[in-house]
Image (cartoon, rainbow, N blue to C red; front, top):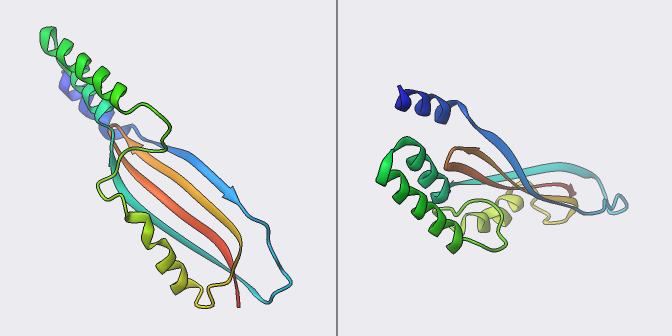
Length: 136
């Protein structure tokens, strides 16, 4: 019963998280403005949350071991960060390439840079995006 409840909770629980937004001004004097939008995502993993799930799902000495592991993982991952660690650290470097496909002139204004995530337990979709206006 405990495993069933935990599995149902893990599969149905999820949330969205906004980590950062940066907005630039819009220059309307340079030409026609066409909206463009690019989003890239990568799978993230929160090992501390996974250890906590293990602690909740177990009993006795095993639960204590998971608690210690959770605490150690929390301590070694201290410091400023946004989002969970991802499997490919360079996934956002392709953003410029995709923006040039959407805006061949390479002239952008009104740039909104967005860093967000959608999480479900210890797994997350780490997302970076740019909304802007292409000057044609």
